[in-house]
Image 1 (tube, rainbow, N blue to C red):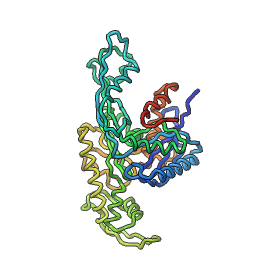
Image 2 (image 1 turned 90 degrees about the vertical axis):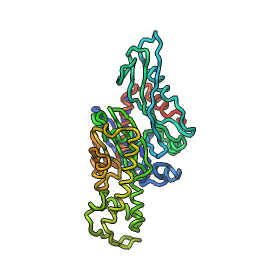
Image 3 (image 1 turned 120 degrees about the vertical axis):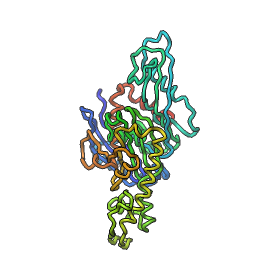
Length: 405
């Protein structure tokens, strides 16, 4: 019996809850059937702080997605963010017996387990163990050692872990809605599925997803994940600065940032005045454009400088031949690509999502890259795992985080 090729990605973000329903096409591309979203309540810096509010928001977004896609949602792939997520690289080693016929799937599982024989903080749990390279008897960078003969198998992994209870809170929210969680995926890994090609991964690339409360990043070198992380800073911090600095209500500050703001240094501002019209509860006023750009540039420069330092902790920038790929809602800010180029001294582009079909407004909007990327990630996992072992594989991935019922 063929498996249903429908996937649902859920992102619980700081500013929005987004649900994307997609189906996979025979050529491996993704067709978007519908998108549900609602403003987020109860999330700060990518983490749940009000369980009941978040649960209600997720319910609203799920219902919206069901109505737009005409699909009953029973299971989801969930993105997770937050500064509690940490990563490191580690090697696992397995000595094979002399009478061993050939390296098999069990050997691959054992070498992965050996790589995870590390001491995490007591509050943390493993989230991802992503293969980088295999080595067989000194033969480096083996893509797939299964079936090969050898006496020693080494494997390098990128390992991501986070605070167990914070991950569980997301899962518990969905359990209350009787939704099955197929897997939990860090935001940047999901976004990379739709904003990077394999060629760019091979050249070396940095994906930066700047959302409302966090900036998530992931680094690929020679086709493998080398570094990843989350900064607890995002577009909402810019909005708050504009609100305080220019004495504007938060809603007006957000609109002003998106419609008129620029991330470039104030000396490159267009200057002049911006007239804000009267709104209910707000008396119109005149804003100095250079003052606005000064506030935005200061915070955006801080975020990108901190990001550069964090990326350099795990990777030399000169290894990133494809440059920097920007995505997320904050990339709609004018001048952000130029500022990032000046800071990283690398090619920078605001990304588009390829190999997709459906409503154009959806895959042209960088706000949806994580949720859409989840469905593409799901399709990739689903297509590579034999049907009879798929659900046991996913359950093992979630093992220790949440008891499936």
